[in-house]
Length: 253
Image 1 (tube, rainbow, N blue to C red):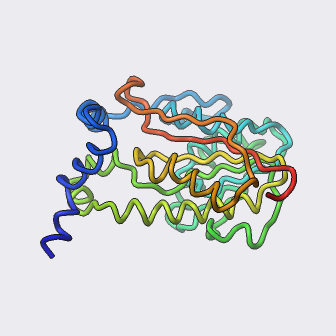
Image 2 (cartoon, rainbow, N blue to C red):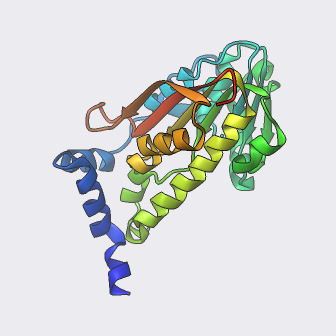
């Protein structure tokens, strides 16, 4: 039991990320503990919605165009879905999915309160398992956003109870779930369609290393278009946000 306890809590958290970031961890940890700075910068809404600038930029990087068929696999609370909906420009369809009933209720409120009727009618809210989506709907979407459930270390640091329970095992579990979601999303994407994978984690295991595992899992089936890692210590408090834009191959890998 003592050995297990040593791998939990604030001490284990700092040891883990010090090993990853080295001396930079001091400044990064401090920045993560400072208040985030959400802004209102999504055009075309009924009223402002406050979202981290890095999150809005990631959703915009998917490049949604009027007329696209779009899927947001893990959509709640809804900020990125608003970015995608406004990019449709009144034409196309957006399926905004979240498995949690409570989160779906919040998602619907956000959509109803912020989207003009002409855009709101283009958005359908669903509650399916994102890890299994590709089994039932194949090559149906031009663009897919997967903002995967992640370790969200910025929130962990601010919640003493969550920090006391933190362990590397949770990161591994979430990374495995995200990999299953990526595989599912790829199945649902049309050839040459684009998939935007994002997390608010600072863990390479849920970010860069996960893409490496995805390449092994689906060799030749996709190509990396671009990626970014936004960390608050070097970006005026924005983030943390990792995103990678992928394009599905024309032919199976």
